[in-house]
Image (cartoon, rainbow, N blue to C red; front, side, top):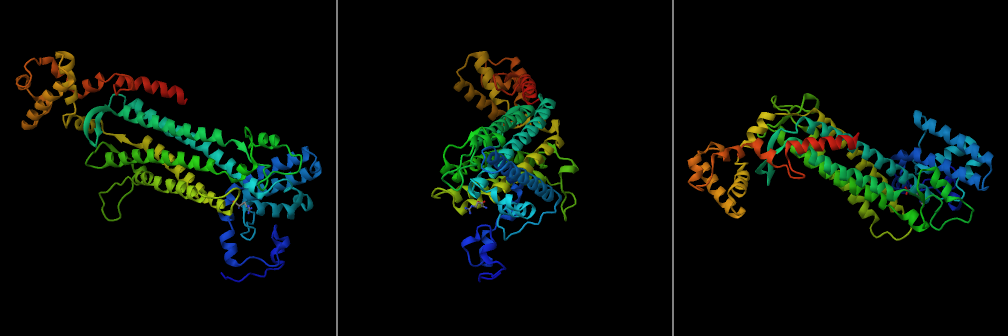
Length: 470
Ligand code: ARG
């Protein structure tokens, strides 16, 4: 690399924009300016946009039908070249837009030079990027749905499987594993619809805003918008080329979704640890240690837990790039793509890996049940019994139950292992039917309030979700 201007043959004039330039860019200038290594991923969208644009130019009488046909034929050839790996991308040509336009010129000559009428790279890239992010929203919604389906399957298998429910990661009350799975289905549904909401808002077409001010040609922006599947053209040319909040919103949705995945991933890490022993991943989703032969590590879960760092990093990167930029386009905005692509790739991979793990994981029902029976998890059921059967105010029932728990602790026994006399020593009106309330099965079955963990609720919710996700 050199700091001196390179005097390539033709100098700056060989650049598409080089009419007023005497010399080419310094090597480091080219290095910082080029984006082709990143934005080549927009080639499909760029060709789609150029076809819509040239079709509109012809329909409006701005270029001839013959030019349009030549342009479309050339763009189809370029698509085939890129698809087959035969396209030579050039860093000197900066970005995907100029790479394609330059190749079009080589292929079809003069008509290629008419394609950029009534258009600028500013509205071109804004359109391409919107198309890309819009598709990503659709893909993400579909990937989330697949993960939801895997979770609903698990919930169906485990509608009545009892496990400890936690608050503060301390044993709280028994819950059903199916209920736990469906908690994530709910979260994911909000994630999924966040992507679809963002999609709705971004679905306006910036093409035709040109550099920033619009164009003096009789273009039909509604036509290009429709051809590209947008609901309508964007209404303000300055906003059209300078808005990136559609990507920010998608990255915010991605960050929130990734944070949900990280919570579930962390639970998989906990459950598969021998200290919990609630679950095992098969060899397909475990890795070994290079030194400790006994190890089975949940690497995929750990990486899903970590992805939120990179994804929220992408969101932050673009947010800070956009902050304080004056209208309209500034080259800063070229940095939108790397951050966005990376975050979206990470989320797509994490969603697929989570769906794989959910289908793969085997729960140890006995171990979960045994854990649910520890830690006085049905103490609240005892208090509720005192309220419902004896009419005690809840606060008094809570106090009496506390005394009974203390007694059980002293005797190193579970609540249901205490004798009736033990309990009567604290509250003399307790009857032997109390024991029917102290098992973990009775506890979860009793929580049949709307949204509660009862197996019957879970079964009904599984049916609802299966219908909804079908
Ligand atoms: N590669 C550029 C980007 O991604 C395209 C727009 C360039 N526009 C310009 N006025 N230099 O932002």
